Image (cartoon, rainbow, N blue to C red; front, side, top):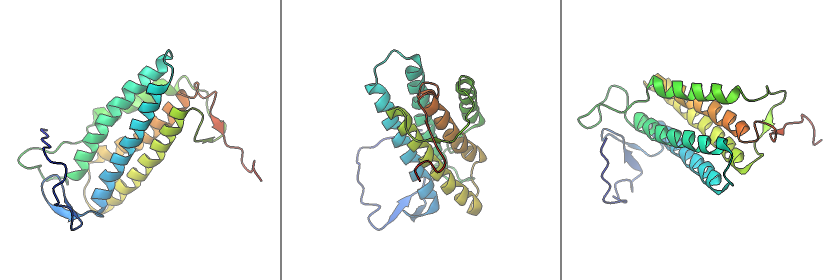
Amino acid sequence: MAVNLDRIYTRGGDAGQTSLGRGERVAKHDIRVEAYGTVDETNSVIGLARSAIDRTVLGDPRLSEANAMLGRIQNDLFDLGADLCTPEGKAKRGEGALRIVPSQVERLEKEIDVMNAELAPLSSFILPGGSEVAAWLHLGRTVSRRAERCMTRLAAEQEINPEAIKYINRLSDHLFVLGRRLNDNGATDVLWVPGGSR
């Protein structure tokens, strides 16, 4: 997919509409736009997590592994945005639309399984926090859950790639497990104490 951006503003959206991948104009508050916009927001939070990794004293191999995984995920999220901005069954201006594929979902699952194997089972829910990186990952997890809600609402009205929904569902699990991994394999997780602040 070639991208050529020689101008940043076009004035095309000044009346409250935007173009989907094949050129169709829709309102900027359309649920499809809301879905891929929330995916983009998820990507931005992951960028903050990666910046926090860059500021962390290196030496822990988990950090470089996490950074590599998050880099792949950021690229996948652009694929997901491209998938969502082109309705199913409609090619993108003379070419096939980019779609999330099963191998992208499977990669997340494999990474979750490898990371989770090193973690003690949870006996309590955990609060977002611990390290700075983990806190950003928890924020990314919650934003990805919001993206998932937008996507399932869209899927109730229009056809959507089922792999896209699988991907965003798996992503929130991945970010949760990765946050625990970067909290010293869960040792510095902040545990919820039910009623503990009464």
